[in-house]
Amino acid sequence: MERILMNINQRILKISEMLKPALKKVFPQKLLQRIKRIFVEKNYKKMVETARVPFERESHPDGVNLIGLVRAEMGLGQSCRLLANVLEKGDIPCSLYDFQLGSTLLKAEEHSWDDRISEAFPYNLNLIHINPDEMMLMYTRLGAEKWSGRYNIAFWLWELEEIPEHWKKFFPMLDEIWTPSEFISNNLRKVTSLPVHTMPYCVEAPVDEDLDREYFGLPEDKFLFLVMYDSNSTIERKNPTGAIRAFRKAFKNNPDVGIIVKINNAKPRDMEHLNRWLEECPNVYFITETLSKVEVNSLIKQADVFVSLHRAEGFGLVMAEAMIVGTPVIATNWSSNTEFMNSEVACMVDCSFATLEKDSPPYKKGARWAEPDIHMAAVYMRKLYKDKVYYEQIRRKAQEYIAEKLSMENAVSRIKTRIGEIYETLERDL
Image (cartoon, rainbow, N blue to C red; front, side, top):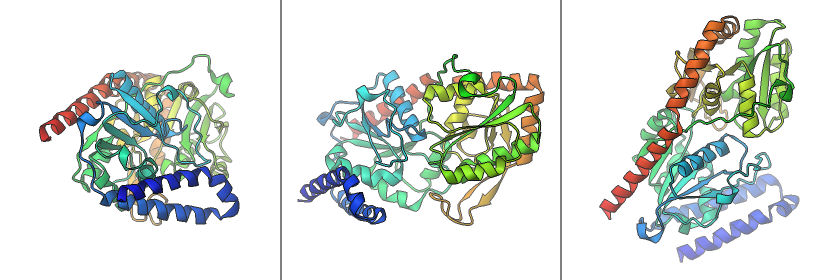
C-alpha cells in the first residue's frame, strides 16, 4: 500500500510541475513553494520508512546511472559532464538522467550529451550528482523503484568545514558518498558511518586558438587579470571584491594593466556592488554573456593571470583549468584547491579566518571561512606583472603539474577501481 501511495504522489508531483506556469498565475509563488516543500518532505519520509529492496546484481546489468544537471550551464552541470566523460573513457557502461530544477535562473542549453540522456535507469549503480538540498525532490520525482535494488552513491560538494545538519536525513537512502576532495571527504567522515571516497575531477580544457582577445573585446596591449564567478554562487564566498581590492592596491591608475570580470547569471545587486569597487580602477572589462565551455577556456588562456581570492572552495575547477591552459593563478591558500596547487606551481595567498556573524545562505551563522591577505595578493600581482622569469616559471610548472595530477588516466583508474571494489564486496556479502 505504501508503494502505491508513493507512486500516486509521484504522479501528482509530475502533474503539478507540468501545470506550474498556470498555477503561478493564480497562486503566490511562496505559497506554491511551501505546498511543494511539505508534499515532497512527506513523501520522502514515507520512502525512508519503507524498507529498501536490497541490492540485486542480477536484476540490472553492471553499469552506472548518472543523475545530475547534465544540460546546466553552471559549475554543477560541468562537473556532472566531467564525470560522464570519465565513465565513457573508462568504458564503464553508463546512462545519464538530466535532473532539472525548473528554475528560470538556470540555463539548460548544454547538449553535448543528449544522445546518452535517458529515463530508463538500466544499470545497477546510481551515481547521484546533485546538491543534497535537492535530494528529496529527486527521490520523490523518480520514485522508489529507481533506487530500490540498486547501489546508491551520492557525489557531493561542500565548501566549509561543518557539514549542514539537515544533510543527515539523506544518509539512510545512500550506500556511500563520493566527493572531489579530501577536504570535503574528511568533513563528511566526521558525521556519517557511510563509506566516503575521494574522486578528484580530471581536467581537460580545450581552447579555440581563433578566439583571441579581439573576439572578446579585450585590448592586445594590456596585462590582464581575470576574475570569474557565478551569481548563483554567493558573492561573499567567491569574493570577487577581494581580487578587485588587491588589483586596486597593486596598480592604482597604471594604464598598462586591466582587470576582466566575467560573471555568469549576473544579478543587478551584484553588478551594483562590483561597480562601486571598480569606480577608480583603470581598464575594467565586464563580460556577462553566457559563453560555451570552449569560449570560457579560451578567455582564461587570453588572460595573463587568473585570480581567485575565495573564502572557501569545494574543488576550484576553474583554477585547475587556468593552470592547464598555461595561465598563472593567484589563489587563497585554503580549502579544496590546496590539494592540486602549492607554492611551486601557483601564487598561494595566506589567510586568516573569520566566523560568519550572520547567515549567508546556504552557509549558517557561526561557520568559519578564510579571509585572504589582500596585501599579499597585491604583491603577487605586481610580481607576475614585472618579473617575466618568475611568470614563465610558474606558468610552465603549473601546466606540467596539473596535467599529471588531474589526468584522465588517474580519474578513470580511481573510479574503475572503486566500482570493482563495490561489486566484489556486494558479491561477497550476498
